[in-house]
Image (cartoon, rainbow, N blue to C red; front, side, top):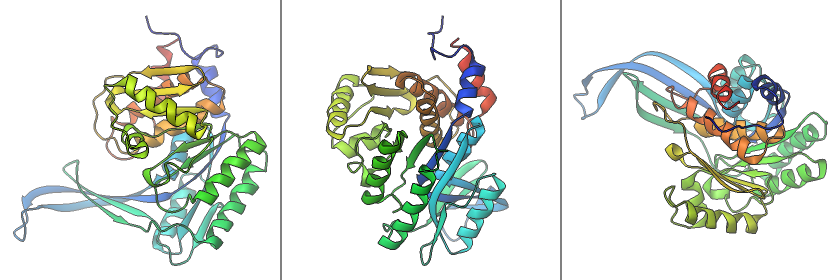
Length: 336
């Protein structure tokens, strides 16, 4: 028999209504995911590489914007504060925001800063190459202040129930901006969750939820960590949580699931076995669902459990996709 989950909710419907009732401000690096789809029938005579005959192209929202799309898929409201360039990529990004039903009012144009575009060339349904157009230079003081004012006004409106910091090391989340957001969240009683990357790993302090993957946790702490050594991982997590003051520390372990540490203790949640097609975007789904869970009042272990289910489901599809809502509901129903 499956273990009972989600105490306090009478049914899956009640749980998903609570998740859909959340309004989350996502602050992070947005990007455009470009896909060049084609067929491979021969090797180039110029070099030993495949020739991809392109059949069609498409653009999708990526990075922090993909987290927003995952929240929308659950029915929650998502707002995104970010920067884009005054370029074609920025215009494409704003167009995708409108197409997705996302307000672009919190997107700040920064002159002479290119919009991040990641182009994936896919031949015969397999990714052959990725080309990145971006800059990772931290925001200058003027741009940071414009972003902060937009964020502060949004957080002060009373509408925001949680803030999610989605860091891709592209320069938006400066140390000063991070500190101000977390401090203002504490002042307003708004939980702040974090999906970190290596360069800023040690900057974050006193977050409500801090969620690296295993590689990021190892690089960020300088420890040799393994998902097969849960005791060693727990010891590292306990020391790190105490040092940084995070309320909940959650580390994803890919095919081995997720571990979560809070005042309730340390828990390992195994992954559900699935046919993995592509892990792109899985982390976005995990942090999005974990944030909704925390905001809706789930215990850390149950928020991690829900996020683990959703992250696994998106890995069954090629490309950066949102969590399949009906599949997630069906999975959750098994634990009632």
